[in-house]
Length: 194
Image 1 (cartoon, rainbow, N blue to C red):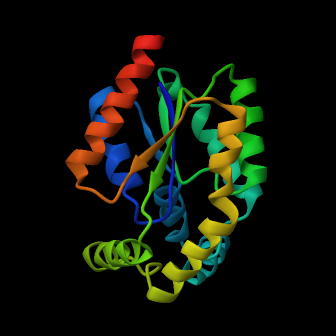
Image 2 (cartoon, rainbow, N blue to C red):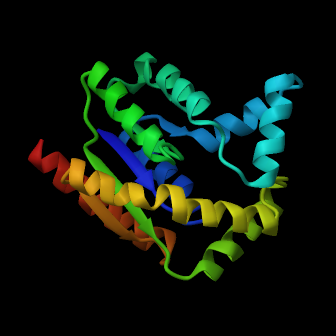
């Protein structure tokens, strides 16, 4: 099963993707984790990524597309994958469409994680920053990322609605269990149609 999770930072995409991974045995491809690993390497790319991420800006489309191309080409994604953090821009969405065509795959479902109250997102991200000692989760960087999400990524929900019929809105401001219950029911209906 090929799954895409969209939603603002702090909406619980990573938490839920981890649960989907555990249930379905497919890899969770979290671009944020991949980038943080690369950022910590003491080379020019690592320093460049650190500057971009500490500001709360988006990494270039070219680098992100190349990362995903490389990751989806690995054998462990043949049975399915969960994409988390990509695409974030229209050029990335179009590149993903092209890449999936090349790999002869489709997205089975796109989850749109919805958290209407921005304060909930901010509190979740500040809590995560404290727990995980994440230098890129400053209040300023969080605000910037939420603004970028609204401008660059939120329009992708409509893009996928027009290019793929199976976009499911998830009310992500509830408990982890309630959210996963909603996701599980949606995935069961996809499996039933397969």
